[in-house]
Image (cartoon, rainbow over all chains, first blue to last red; front, side, top):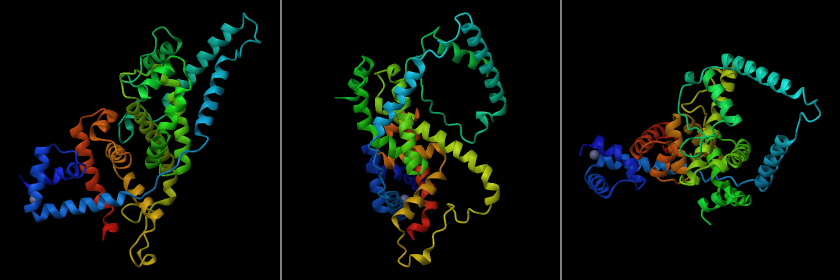
Length: 152
Length: 187
Ligand SMILES: [Zn+2]
């Protein structure tokens, strides 16, 4: 095998991620080729540099804080903010709020640089279809997401 | 109890199952964030936000996917978003700092201060972080998950939604670039 091909395999060889047959080829090449053997040694040294021994310890109150934050946002959601409003006025406020939200959203959308202009486009979306169930159709969230998507 | 059993328990109303998942993964999430962000305080804050996101989405998580894969994906995504917005903010500030990047990795190591050429642990960690920042996002994710989180090529491929062979080539290229950037530490 050519040295250039071998050298491309050195990283995976170091990680023990080569299949047995390939591993055998690389290892026997390293025994006979000084250039590739030197490359392999260099790679190992560089890799060892990454072991800076730094590992952070989790905050002892992490869980408490997470749960407090979740609880606070749940309380906010369930508190009927409009309870004090006259029943007849509530729908008008909701409509006005939605319209205002849409206008602000459109403004922001115009002013923000487009995602496509960022240098790298790697996107590992959090709410990924592979991992979570789709939003129930007809739900308020699904309707909102649909509305926003149709505007883009 | 396995992760997936805890997830199912949570989805059936046993909210305490979430606590076990946090305790099991807090170290991994925190240190993944730290490698991307390079700042301990930011990493702690990010970890907290990530678990809040997880709590909110856990009811809709499909148990046929591996929980850890999903969690790592959230951690990577969240960290990258923070890095991107940090970059945008610092780009605005760089006008006054032109020329600050004097060495290849933007860090000046005073070799005279270290006659035995041994770089202090903290400085070394800083150099490694600066070098990691110079990689493209895909290479950075691969090397962080592999070298610092000890994940296999297959696990990384699932997290990054790609093939094992492209993880292999991303790691190969990442190491080539790191070797150049960290060359001065090897001499
Ligand atoms: Zn060779």
